Length: 140
Length: 108
Image (cartoon, rainbow over all chains, first blue to last red; front, top):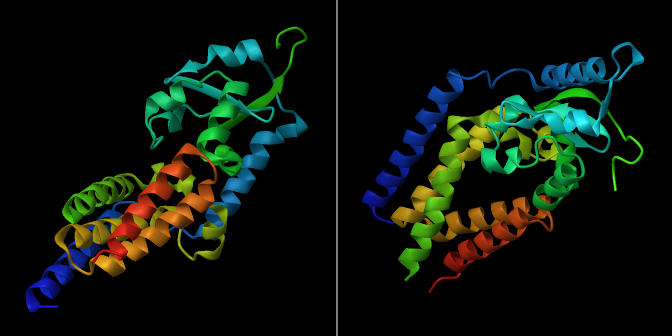
């Protein structure tokens, strides 16, 4: 290992380190994770159990929210508004837009692409809207 | 030919690393729950650090610095991600990338 190689390695590490320090200072990344977790839990509870009532969303109403500006999805009977997160999907916006307004198709796509474990993140990336109500004859 | 492998792997590491640093909130979704639970850091900070490490490893592999050890870390990292993702298209992709990295570990 010659001196030049070590110098380049140190330069790379320092440069990336400075980039991280600069980036972390412009983001709120040092929030206490325990508080954040509690906030999420409280938010989920307030969303899902507000007054012990979860609005019933029909398949037809869900299907109306099918664009990047208004995207609802349903997983395991719970409907979420993920509009704010559509543009943040690392796999691209299009992959999400194609399943906006969907229940079964969304579940299949999420499970196939990321596995069932990722479904537990839905309450964190989206806003709980209500429970999917299956209307007789609406689903085949 | 080893150069082609190094450039290819570096491009992947740079793309993911830079994107994680530019907008960490996009990527917190992909951090497994057990990582968040055992880490003292916020999910955003985990993503930032992960992105930084990926850029450093990508640069090392591209410029031929500590290639074996860097590639070994990348391979282990990718195998862990693949394990977390399971039998999904993303998981299989990462297995392929992990074997690319292993090829650099065992290069002559």
